[in-house]
Image 1 (cartoon, one colour):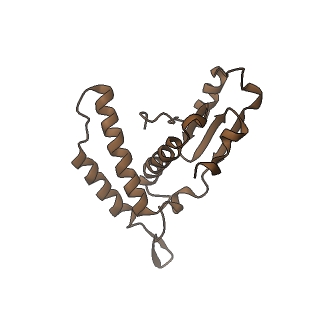
Image 2 (image 1 turned 180 degrees about the horizontal axis):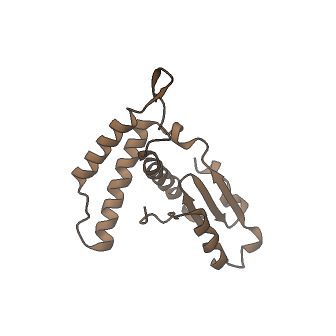
Image 3 (image 1 turned 135 degrees about the horizontal axis):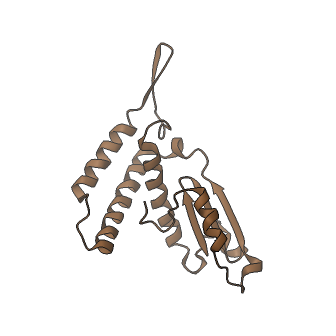
Length: 166
């Protein structure tokens, strides 16, 4: 996770970052602050798309780690494939007992599974990679994400309008 530019370990770390963050005076008065929360993230991640995004993000992070450290990463590509297969099995087999009945999660990711946080993070990392790569010169001055909470600073209102990127 730490290899991702938007990574932050807590919402408190964003506050700490903002205390020392320098803003260019040429656009200071026109800046737009965006705070957002991805609504009902876990149950809204389609598992097949999520696994595909997870695979792409893990492969990307694998390559990035090789470049940065000049060493062979701990996980090889076949390990990543195995992790994705196991994750798919786990995500497709979540059950809960209520009273005398057993229910299977049929849509999205079950919030109680330990895999959910990592899965959601990798999903959003890949999704933000897709969106941020389309921003070109309108890239936010600052963009950070903590699980499903987003924070961004844009130079002006026009740069903050997301509809023109989708």
